Image (cartoon, rainbow, N blue to C red; front, top):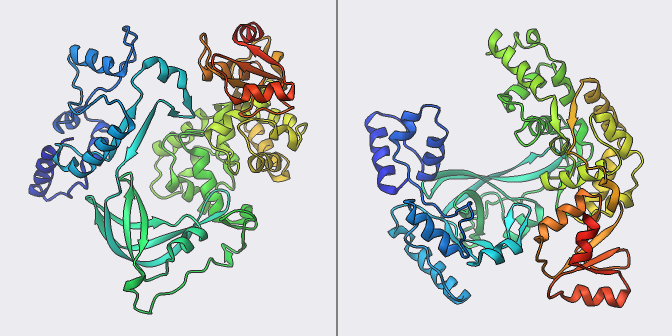
Length: 497
């Protein structure tokens, strides 16, 4: 939404004695979500096209823009191809100073490698393409006072300090809280309760304390200390980390709330229409004690709760029952294992289906009981701390009881399809170096994992194969020195056929 249309919209809001909108970004997002298309149409939204997914013979990113423009799409008139990083930095600096001249708001620039072939070969890490990068501008800033520091607890029992700020407007958004992350961040900032601080919004979105103005202290400021107890449990600092956590998170009621919020979330069981307020009501009225209890709820159980009519009770129960069939990776993510996000959940899932098709929670118990700590440590994308966390989780008696409850609730897990030759590369570790003509790096990794193999980023004696493409690097030399088997692209393709 351009700035003029945003200002006109707020004038109309003021005329109707309605609340003003904070910024164009929020209005644009809210307009897209409107159920009534007439409201969306009235908001005068606009867009630029930046990418062409169809292969029309384009060799460069610039050609993509030219084709899009020829088709009648709007393209950004400020797009520019340059020949050096120095020119990139000049453009970034120019638009940071002059972004106010644009008819819409921006928070940075995006730099893309022009060659389509190079970008394809560079691939993607997680959700981030190697062939592009976003340069964010410095956050918009404001001065305010830290009125208090409170702690919040997460689903794993980790405590996060949060600064309660005297409300201040930053870029059209009123900010009253900012996360302080951990004790080390508070020490780095030299922050005390009552301090005057500079607050920004990282990426023009997330409130963040940038600097403490110690010269403005009055002497009435107070040092913050982490609580020794939280929700009746002892608080300890995790060895080797900056985090504080409750010693027995399973006995902390607030942790249980957080775990359930995570369990029903879109990225996990995706229980549509069931948010924190409903979870809180179910827990507060002792209708559930853990996530497995959700699947036993009946319509009549919900009717005594405030704001629950017959139809809304039916909808909640129906949503829960619909979620009982779930993909393996989403199921593992839903469990809320410490240090395990969506990407690591995929790696864990692949480890399970090396051993058997997982179709119910009981299958996880059966496989995990046979896996040792070193088995988890062999997965290339999982480090020692994460491996230890996974091993401890699946060997916890309370977790086994919880998985058994989910199994009794008739949870059905859908595993990715496994080919007949899935175990062909089982326990084989590969290192990829150089570029291949037939496959991208990500495609090669995916094929290895599909066949049960693992990927390592470094060469060691435990590696089975080093796949050497064109212009291999130091990994090739190290493999020769260690006597690790080296195969070319042709031999690799035969291996994975």
